Length: 273
Image 1 (cartoon, rainbow, N blue to C red):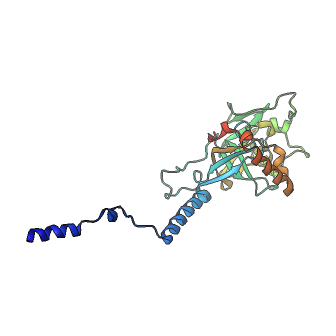
Image 2: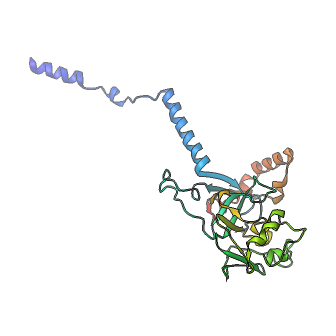
Image 3: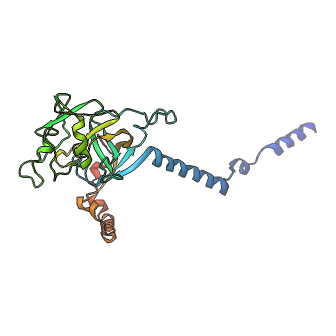
């Protein structure tokens, strides 16, 4: 009799198959909390770690083309803290780095610009025949392109190509502020990069308005380093000069219609270096 009672107790305690298969359902509050955490994390990453930028000019051709869309690492060149750890390592700005920064040109103070770092604090820079010399040595720059004689964009600018030996003219693209301060930084025919500043130039050397025209890049203006191109679309240079809403909407419609045939697929996920 006692044996039968024990068997009955086991049968009573054994969970049914239906009970085993059932999982606790997520409540609406729990779902919204999970969704909110994902959105907050994504917003945090986009705001403080990575930021999307679009290339509007030809100053960095062939490295970056008009219409390239890049993700920029905002943390790498930031003041060092320990909250990121090894995920996004910090580093100093080095010669040859490509950086995004707030314009040092007083005429466009809120414009984001991308250039390559040619000189770091203490470096001595000058150009001869359009070639860059740093600390007395001619640089080997395989990424640089120059306009050739006969090209529609070809022009000779002695100030640009013999910087800083030739003084800026009254009608050039040099800012008035740089005209005044440039002589203070010239020593023995070289421009000397001051502390907490950088000398930046475009890879499309003859079409780039850079440190030769508006001065040094302050350290605090640097936003970050472009990591890779996430999308690239064939975009005319004049498109970024369009101000009328109808023109902008027209180009947006053009993008929608020609998304597949005018996207530069080969540049997708290409590293920027």
